[in-house]
Length: 134
Image 1 (cartoon, rainbow, N blue to C red):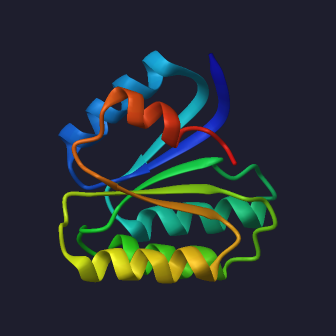
Image 2 (cartoon, helix red, strand yellow):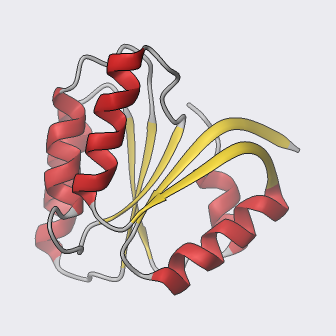
């Protein structure tokens, strides 16, 4: 079984968060799964982690359509942070808009982090692949 210290789920849909937690818990050993209902809460938490010198999440699951701060805004701020480690960021969305895929490509090319684009619903075998730390 894969072992990961921390996973972060950023999604405003409690049913999606519940399902992802259940799948992750059945597929791997994870010390902590943090969840945030919008990008602002998540980026504030990550900035605090950096300020405290604590370990960042190795894997992030990121919805793009959320209130307050959406996934694209979160991603923009995240890639500007002084993070040496490579974080795996899995965009998870129900969007079929080609503009979103172009934005994903833009951010993927702009960062050293691994950024993937995945359509909802996420299946168990897909979530296992998305949890592999690069």
